[in-house]
Image 1 (tube, rainbow, N blue to C red):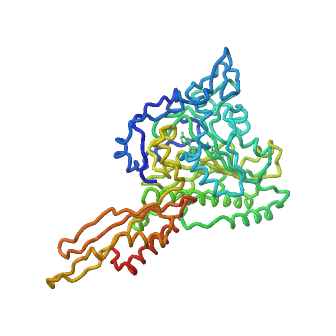
Image 2: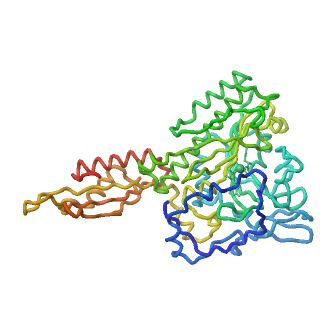
Image 3: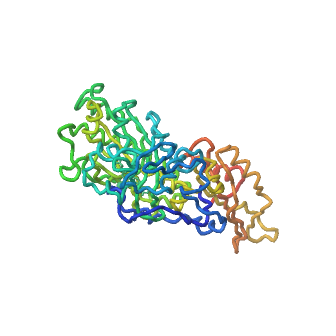
Length: 495
Ligand code: FA5
Ligand code: MG
């Protein structure tokens, strides 16, 4: 999806915002700021005059908010308000939008793409966003004076009720429910945050967690062996990963030594990191393809790189962030770590241990679909949304060739005889090789060599499956068979 139609006017009311870290966790977004602007921005702006819609859109079908003395109703649920209340109506109006559940919405497509990498995990995609302070902060071990709790960073309904600032707010409840070893939560989250094209006061996160029951697998070495067995079932990738730090470090990234052995944590960390590398490698391969960065030269100049860096979260230890080298800079994608045992113990599953992660769906969707501004996700302009009807990212590749040369009748140099080449033969060849996995084939360049008179053509083949995301490897294989066919069957000279 290399070209995105961008609605023009972006007058968006984001509510009151402050320029501080929303939550005391998120690293500054300088990395994302450095991402290459989508090549389509400049030339698509002119295509539209429709305003970007914010969550304030008055066209919203169900008015989610009405206030009656000292109480508000949000999405049909009533809450008492007090002097802590700082959530404006535009923010509360977003509660019922649920972009991550709208079919064909890029946030929803991104969610499904990631979910498909965790086929055995139970997905929770409809958890209500208004939670207690206990759920959002206390159960996760946030210190009473943690800046994330402040009214400058978090939207409060009343002293003990907030709009969740992260999907981790549901971790403890789902551990307590104990419905599955692995689970994913996708949801809208709310932060009073900086305003720029990468930040919006409402965005979407996906939380993931996996735990192993020691009563099933044994303790120490035997548990570690069971986890390593699971690690061996995660698909292998060939991307170089920078991970220079030891799994645990006494000061920077401590082992929860009263609960876990080093062997157990090495195994849990390997499972966590390999699972997330698998997701990110798949997603970013698609993103690169979608951005057209597919030729071998570009791959050689800027190979795909990911790295693990040490991090801190009150609810995991050790903890890490995963960063991707994307168009010239490191971009933070997610935070994760080994779940604090106190959370599992308090949730009555003390026999379990495992990992959790939280990632930003907008960050990934922006790269996957070349969406240049986070506000666009809230657009209700059909022309923007309809672009994602074909739900799987495209991957285009070029093929250039000289047409067959014939000696000129004057006995001079060789000249191309364009009559020898029929475009429809090429289309037929592409169809024979790739069938419906090709969306279109377009001539993007042609020229005649000034001295030899030979003619060169360059075609762009856009690979896209209607059913699934094509991997770059699959597209490469198809492309190479098409190139061979062109040379062998149509007699062109590949360039
Ligand atoms: C958290 O929210 C933790 N709950 C993540 C976590 C879960 C850690 C489980 C350990 C275990 P953080 O604030 O860094 O962490 O946000 C996680 C991700 O959300 C970031 O890496 C980023 O991808 C995304 N994100 C954070 N803030 C924003 C924002 N304002 N706009 C868009 N995406 C954001
Ligand atoms: Mg962070």
